[in-house]
Image 1 (cartoon, rainbow, N blue to C red):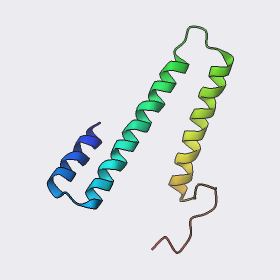
Image 2: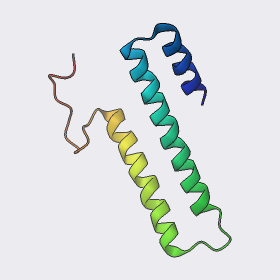
Image 3: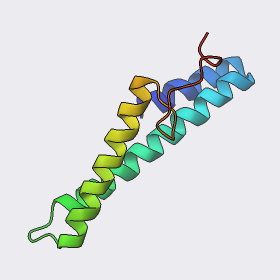
Length: 88
């Protein structure tokens, strides 16, 4: 949430396209985080969770961690190494 506030303030002061892009990216990250937390709480904190919900929760967590690992290692979305022409 603080990231969105910072980006909004940054864009309000600069009013440039890159600051608007940063604000949009911060809003998207905040929305994705909110959805992930809401899904996790909905699926995890049940008195007797349904087996299909448990599978969905495990798949969601595995996907998020896989994406984060790929981005940290510099891999593309399809698992291939990032193009050397993009890294300068």
